[in-house]
Amino acid sequence: MARIDFDSFVAARSTALLRTAYLLTCDHAQAEDLLQTALTKAWFSWRRISGEPEPYVRKILVNTYASWWRRKWNGELATEELPERETADTAGAADDSHDLWQALGRLPRRQRAVVVLRYFEDMTEAETAHALGCSIGNVKSQCSRALTKLRIDPALVTEEEL
Image 1 (cartoon, rainbow, N blue to C red):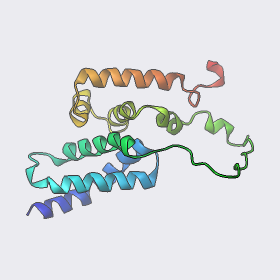
Image 2 (image 1 turned 90 degrees about the horizontal axis):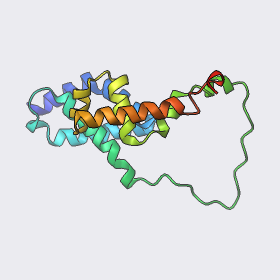
Image 3 (image 1 turned 180 degrees about the horizontal axis):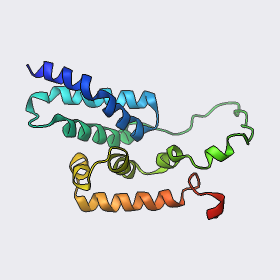
């Protein structure tokens, strides 16, 4: 019985959960991997979930995303030849100067998670705190720090503001 419930949950909510995963990772392939990992973890504990399962699965999703930095190295790889330098693309310069995705990508993982849950998923501070397993005060401070960083991020600053 629990497996059928899990299957129907995945069918009904996977698109919304994938959107959250994409907003956290800013990469479609990583978002799919993150969602698959979170759903796998949820499946193993599905029988123990009481009440609405989506907040529980979102918490797994965010915690898994936050822990990936420990396992994944994002450094540079050495090569014998330097890659060619990119030429300046002036056609897309106006669009690139207001790139929210780049700015979100520069936020620390915890701050990005708070911004995604609060503003893209439209969760309350209490719901966000529950999803992240922290206090409401922590959500408020992380959100404040994230918004401060976004306000001064070069990808979001217009020429008029300089």
